[in-house]
Image (cartoon, rainbow, N blue to C red; front, side):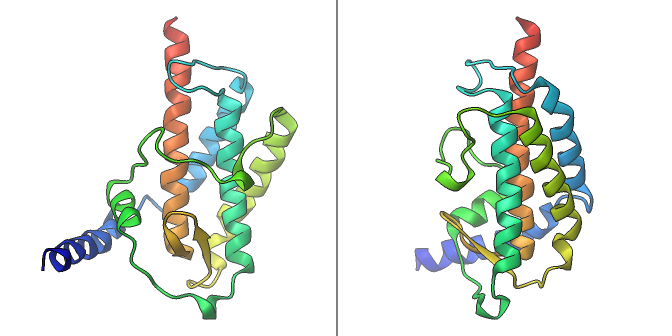
Length: 179
C-alpha cells in the first residue's frame, strides 16, 4: 500500500515538473553563458571542484551533442514511456546533487582540452538546440540512471544538467575572485 502511495505521489510530482520547465529559450541562454566562460577555461579552484572550468564546459557540451545525436538516430516507434523515481525527483527539483554521479566514458573530457575544440563543440550544440524541437516527440535516448527519455524529457535533462555544471563554474570563478 505504501509503495502505491509513493508511486502515486511521484507520478503527480512528475507531471507537475512540466510546470518547472524552463523558458522557451533557456537552453540558448545557457549556451551563451558557456560561450562567455570559454576564455576562462583554465581557471580552477579545488575547494569547489577537482577539475577546471574547461572540464565542466567540455563535458556539458559533449552531453548536449551526444544526446541530440542519440535522439536523432533513435526509432521513435520503439519508445516506451517508463517511470523512474530518481528521474522524477531530479526533474521535480531541477537539481542534480553535487559529487553524487559518475559521468559515462562517452562524455568525459580528454586530458587536454583546447579552446578550438570547445568552440567547435559549442557551434554544434547551438545548432542542435535550435533543431531539437523539430525531432519527433518520441525520439529518445537511454540515460544510464533515468532510463529512456523522450525528446521533451531529454531537453529538460539537458537544461538541468547544464545548469548543474554552470553553477559549479560560477562557484569556481566566484571563489577564485575572492582569493
